[in-house]
Amino acid sequence: MSDITLNTAAAASPEAAPRQPPATVVGPVAWVRANLFSGWISTAVTLLLAYLLIRWAVGFVDWAFINAIWWVPDNQTQVCRDLHGTGACWAVITEKHRFILFATYPYEEQWRPAIVCLLFIALYAISAMRRFWRWELAVIWVVTLAVIALLMWGGVFGLSYVSQERWGGLPITLILSTFGIAVAFPLAILVALGRRSSMPAIRLLCIVYVELIRGVPLISLLFMASVMFPLFLPEGMNIDKLLRAQIAIILFAGAYLAEVVRGGLQALSKGQYEAADALGLSYWKKTGLIVLPQALRLVIPPLVNTFIGFFKDTSLVLIIGIFDLLTAAKTSVIEPAWQGFGVEVYITVALVYFLFCFAMSRYSQRLEAELNRHRRR
Image 1 (tube, rainbow, N blue to C red):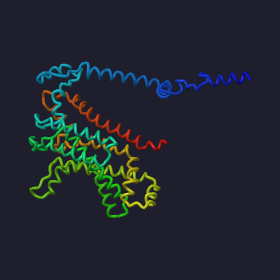
Image 2 (image 1 turned 180 degrees about the vertical axis):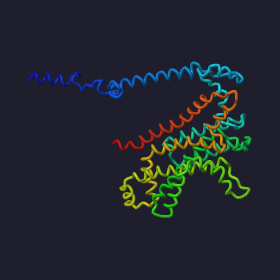
Image 3 (image 1 turned 180 degrees about the horizontal axis):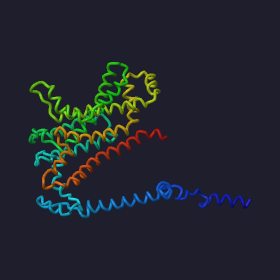
Image 4 (image 1 turned 30 degrees about the vertical axis):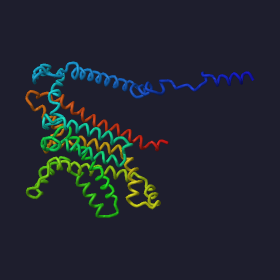
């Protein structure tokens, strides 16, 4: 009887509580040991890569921060040239940042495109919040885009008029990507549904559109929109170059997004369609309430990947003479005083692209996890 009592007391004591596995079995230490130091070859490769990475990181810090020059007076770039590449000359960004961001937009009016960039970022942030996913969001988009057009063009409320030929830099990149994706996405949904339609004419039309657009590069579409399309217009009629480029980007993006959406529709189980038919729902109610929400949820990663690609592809408009962010950055170092410092400019522009693309990537991961939470139950 005393032995049973002792055993019961020992089991109830803190010492008898379940113990955690040792750190060498699970956890970060175990992962490092299993993946980086599992054998002598793995250990040698890990140490070699670590050495090279640390050496590169130290060299980059020396070049980008410790030996860098951040400002020079009156374009006296000889100070930067005396470094002979041992340090970065960020003075080119200090001197040319307004041209890189806003290109040839009138200098004294550049506060207007600056506000436009902030409005775009605010619009993205509001659209990313699910509590705003109501009909009011469409009103917010219309009002914000109207304000953006008012600021960029001007001509009213005491704002001086600025023609589209003077637009450039980051606002052009945001305009082309935002309007391109916003218009191409509904178009892609209609085309994807059309490719699965039971009407042969509609299905054939959608197939021809997708295969034709996907069969040529975006550069050729931009070239056709800039050079060939005006030849087919009536005499005296002309469409703005920026609008032609925007239409080309929309058509290109719509074809690629349509295939992504079609993949989601095909991945949806047939039972969902049969359940909707059993409820007696019409085609559009079945599609809008049951089919599309589930199909789009399945293809969030490829959708966002396509969005990121199109955001970067807007830089191709340089071939038709539109000053987007990358083109403005390349033009900023044409001046003889700043030639040879393109690396600093390209790093800065790459950082801007990275911030926007990384934000889209992180948001897509969070949205996918949130919408697919029910699958983990």
